[in-house]
Each structure stands twice: as structure tokens, then as C-alpha cells.
Image (cartoon, rainbow, N blue to C red):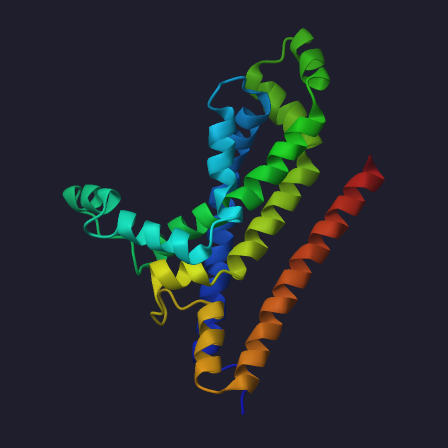
Length: 227
């Protein structure tokens, strides 16, 4: 008996593609959002921070259900997409990306927010006295100093996306080659009583998560040694 079937390998590849896509997009979104949360004095700061953190306490199936209603053909976003001639997002890979981004958002934004808080204002003020502009201060001073937080955010976002189940089930279903990720494939094996295959795939998820955390630890150790 092969350790991994063709369907298992397909699900593994789809999972890694989803996690890589979501992690990249979340870093692009999370960096400016975390920077704003760390430095703004706006009264909207706390409500927005609470919304960002909401997936930490919200059951995945609840989030998935409301996303399904919002993105579906009768939802606000679904109708807007239809008016633009675009396909609905539920039960597509793009829909999985959107749902996974929302569900993994706090795992990326919060480490970035903490990292920018730790940098403080002093280095930025010194850079400003040297006539560094806002973008220059961000990319040349704040981002390098916050790099360990960026690594942590990327690893946590990737690992969290790899292990998603509830949101994936609600918004993506279980379509082979499109939305059937590894967690869904494990569920299929368990439902069929194929515990050996489920164990093999579970070990794959465990290995990916362990490798991600080990890489994060090694990168942070090397960074500390250079500093």
C-alpha cells in the first residue's frame, strides 16, 4: 500500500499553495495595518484591533458561515462580484484564500504589532533628525529592527493556514483539486475508516508545522547572534 495516494499528494500540494499564498498576502496587508495600530492615536484603533483579533475567539464554523452568506450569490459581496461579471467565491480556491486570510489575520498582525511596539519611537526620531522620510524610516529602520516579528508572523500565518478545517469546510467544501486541502483529506480517510492513511497525512501536517517552527527558531537565533 502506497503511503500517499495521488489524491493525497494533490491535497498536500493544494494545502501548501494555499498556505504560501495566504502568508504572502497577509504580510502585505498586515505590515501597514500593524504599523498603523502601533502608532495611531485614532479612536478607531481599539475597535479595529478587536475586529482583527476576533478570529482568535470566534468558532471557525461561525466565521465560515457568515463568510458563506457574505460571499455567496445572495450576499453583498457576491452580488457586487456578479454585477462586475465575476464568479462567486464560495467553493473556489480564491474563496479559500479570502477565508483563510480573515481566519489567520490575527496570527500575522499581532506579532507584527508587538514587534513594531518593541522598536519604539526613539530610532525613528533619530532617523527623522537625519532627514529620513516616513517610507525611508519604515523600510530602513523599523522593518529591519522588527524582522524577528516578521519571521514569527510569517511562520504562524503559514502553520495556521495549513491546519485549517472549519473555515475550509464551510467556504470551500471538499472539491478534489480545487478546495480539498489536507485537513479535509484526513477527515475523508477517518470517515471511511482508513486510519492508516489518516495517520500518514496527520504526520505530514505535524512535520510541516514542526519544520516551520524550527525554521523560525533558527532564524531568530541567527539574528540574535548577529546582533
